[in-house]
Length: 347
View (cartoon, helix red, strand yellow):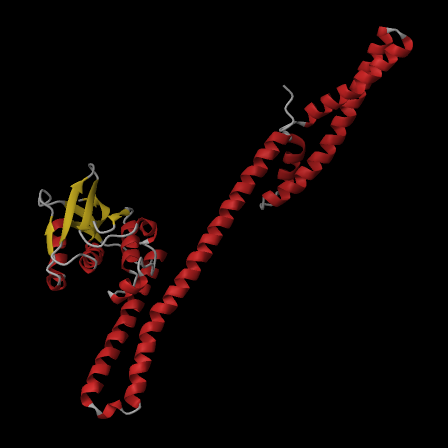
């Protein structure tokens, strides 16, 4: 069946030549009543029209194709490549050109989508960064102005305001440290110092570090039953401690009072170990799960900011784990709890 969707110059020339030659042949037969004359006229008209139309189509189409390829390909050919492409390389059919143009269009669409997404993330990042910096600065400004306008005469007020100012300064210092660390991690400037160590040991150290915070909400932190057997991993110990403290701190922060935070350690295969930190807290809504590792992304702006932190903890965790060539993931359900896991190489 004749397909007009991806018709080639030869097909179009043949079809047009038939449309021209058949009526001419029929006309000759009607006039002369000699089928041989009609056949000769039909053949001559068909051959002449076929090659003429084919020549015109090819000349016009491939001139346009050359212009199209100038847009598609940004690499400029040298003289030898131009000669090869013009005289030696077989000319592409319309179908091949159509396929090339469609691939190019898909690539450009993907690039545009990436640029739009990057612009959206950049805009959100700048807005969030401005807000994170603005909040402590305005607080500090308010305390200092109040002190300068007469509150210095009241020692109790002065002490309280200076303590609050110190807290906001510390928050800004933490923010700058986290930004510096995440920038180094993203650029690859921060080198990994890998060594072998027992993962359960540093999990217990992290639990101990945060025991006071956990005690305030009567949260019990433990290694999951059946996961106590020592497992050796090969990684940057200090950075993995940072990851564990961030994850456990979040689990305590958003865990429920009298709740539990548990650490699970699993051998996934001969080369990898899976470490998971789980809580039975407020959980995360499904629409937020794909974005919780973004810088400054907060699932609940007011509640998250009141809970403290710079908003960079999970982003730093992600970069540290990916710097090890591993992956980090999250599972969660509202009012059920959250589990964040990551893999490491076995020691």
